Image (cartoon, rainbow, N blue to C red; front, top):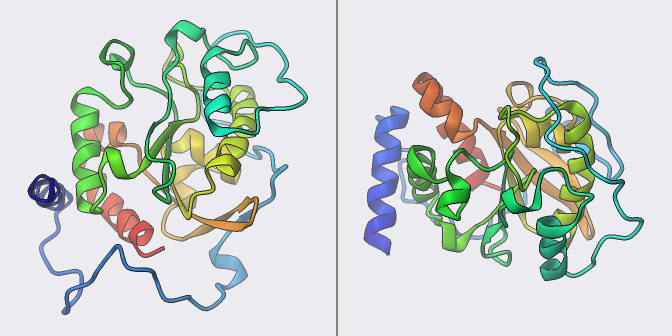
Length: 252
């Protein structure tokens, strides 16, 4: 297991263009961090539980599917809520096309992506194929794996267009905030534009490069936004910037 993680990390570092040590001395990325001083107001964003999407997506897309209004009360048990996401008619997308979150919800690290990839349903797992291979290398570089992190899609089903409308993002944001409240992670990594807009109210490019705070049941949860592995395959020149984001996430 440790050898596989090490090889994944080396592969990702090479792809990201890392050509120097992160620090002069060895560092335990899994150690509990020393509390940092309060950040300046301009360097972080606090999002209240009832926050809404302020900026629409630049490109329009067909709705993922018609959905019924969400119920007044959502399940307050994580297992029951995950079943709700897979089965309930109020969740956008056909139930037959939905995929569950994966990994360990008790790991403290919650990673949120927009939706399943093409082929994920047939593979019966999130982030399969080439995108999944790159994602696994990114996890290895952070000394994480699919077994020791919690990966959740904003939309359990993939839209026909591969995009989510602002209206769909807004409705899914309510469900994701509830999901986060049940998981109670110690840190969040938002992969791509849709989850970033859903939880922060603006896009990934604007959100990158600094930490944000998302309200949780016991206080603010630190969050970092970065590029989706899908985009990194399409534009490899962004991998170096993505590595900087992962370092920021590891330091939380």
